[in-house]
Amino acid sequence: MKLIPNLTLREIAGEKMLVLQGATGIDLTKIVMLNSTAEYLWNALQEREFKNEDVGELLIQKYGIAKDQAKIDAGAWIQSMVNAGLIVS
View 1 (tube, one colour):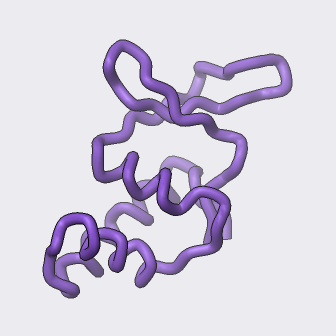
View 2 (spheres, one colour; view 1 turned 90 degrees about the horizontal axis):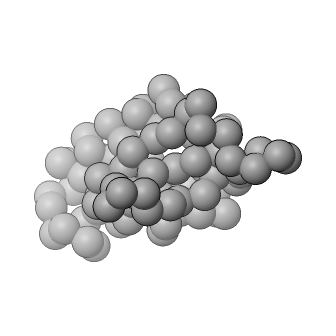
């Protein structure tokens, strides 16, 4: 799977947001807010293929959590990105 490429991470009013960069500028009809963990994963996984295990490893490296917990958290993050339409297979 891969993150969709036409999104830009912006800071607006102190919040990190993903905005769709359209042909005529920014389409503000769909904005996704990111917490610090989601922002870290988004930045780490830009322009590369990844699997659940890759996301889990990033969480382990950053936060030192157990492998089982990282697997659960990675799955939850991936599912939230899929639900928002931000991941392509």
